[in-house]
Image (cartoon, rainbow, N blue to C red; front, top):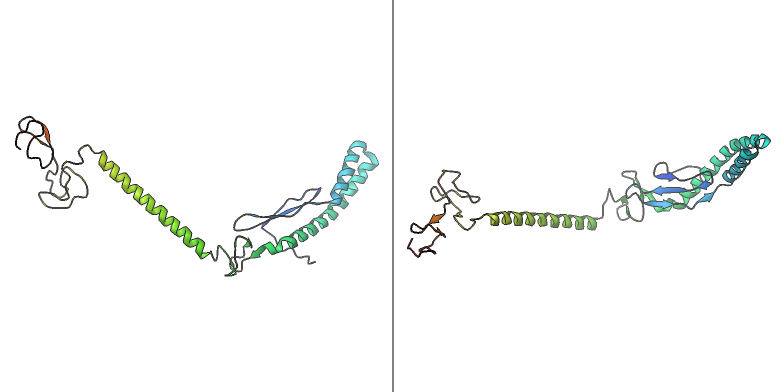
Length: 215
């Protein structure tokens, strides 16, 4: 087995004095795989000797100190070996993108057809579906905004009265209901009233709806 350690960044070391375990992570999606926990014989032995020295001291305490120094080097070698085995076990689950050098999981984040990660070569079908969804959402918001503007217009008390598309004086187009023309200042809207009883008249009425007087 090669002694080269290929994974140098996208992993978490979950090892303890009792054993070894590693978690390898995809640079793109953040998901990954965890190796099974592998007990450490040296860690268990050291822990037993340390407990005995704490209870009895003396010669056993000196033995535990020596054992710790031996355990440190032995444990490190076992740790590296466990890492190499874990990396070899999960190596086929990851691919390094030749364009951005990211380590990505083969199952979800690797574009097999393009030979690149999906950040560098996204799935066209997925991108098209996302673009269509975004466009649909934009249209929904646009229609909702128009509906809101319509509701605001309907809230106006006299929305049926005096609504004109152009100024009766200068003929300029009016973008919304206004009282005076923004171009010439002419009065645009004004409620008409019956000269006999004072009732408000609807636009185009020929007779007063209250007293019947001809307008």
